[in-house]
Length: 269
Image 1 (cartoon, rainbow, N blue to C red):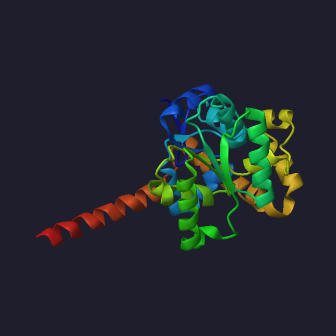
Image 2: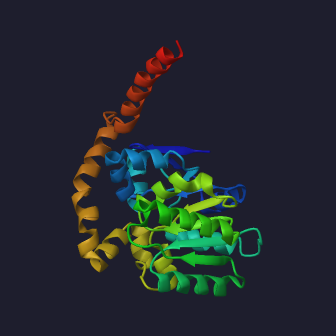
């Protein structure tokens, strides 16, 4: 599979249809954008979670422009909000695909479940749950959610609680699921499906201005994400262009591994 290295993210350079067909065999899908890329520079936990993904696909026209600037063009933008409807449409007649929705407010999640099932013509979304705020810090609630998903008979988990929370949660609990073969980290997609949040006009998305549309609609929540990270992001890209960028976590993890190895040898002796 072709890959594009962008700072400390390895993006799979594949098309939507290729990804959908590959997911028949299962896998974890993350959708990196500029916000993810910058969080990956600051959070080792997020970076480690990202290493467990089977597919990392480009969720940003800006990243597509940057990859072309770096001489490694990405062939298609695959955002979570485009991937999810494409996924349930592609697998609408596959009875083995049973989706559990995790995220959004209770009424929103239930509305999304109803709307999607109506489009597909079957109960492809077999359950939907809205976790409490800060649920990821409550182990008891997390274990209850794991039990709920396991008892639902779902084979797909689509989680939309925002990054890096959703990616870290998948990485932490993925091995506790009995039937889940496909994990989709989909951000605000549940809200889009329910109609409680509007997506940017298609033309804005196509030219890379979807972030600007979201900023106009949610300025208080998103201004730091989109404006404060812009200058450091482009500085890091310039460093990569001139082969000066170093992955902060790779170096640190290699040092830790070297320190652990002598300790293990001394314990054996």
